[in-house]
Amino acid sequence: MFYGEQIAAEVAPTVDVGLIDQSYPLVVSLTADKTTRSVRLRGRTSGAAYVDATCVLVPEHLPSEVLRDLATTDVPLGALLHCHKVPVLRRIIASGFDESGADQRPWRRSMVSTAQGLAAVVHEMFILPERARCECVS
Image (cartoon, rainbow, N blue to C red):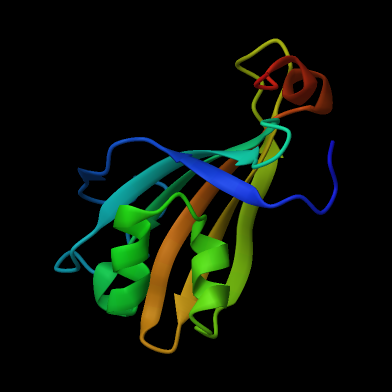
């Protein structure tokens, strides 16, 4: 693991979604426009994979410049919020281990709120160090 290196988000296509999921049906109002952004966070220098993350975004609660940068850059959501000086409260609402795979990857789910309200629900699946080393890009 390369501590302190900058992180790049390998972005998957953005798609429209309905509810976040049935576990948290009241987290966002049914009228809010929601989209998802799925990424694999990698070290910019090493190429090591660290986290697979999916964000369910509520665009009406995010500044337009953050939304623009989410669509046009590989910068992770947290870094963009910091860069644009958007004050946020991030609260972990669940965590555990994915027992469906052989490696039991740790995960956590967080709510990210801005002054306007809930801005995102983030689900992160952490890549174990052995897997991160194996997936380095040469």
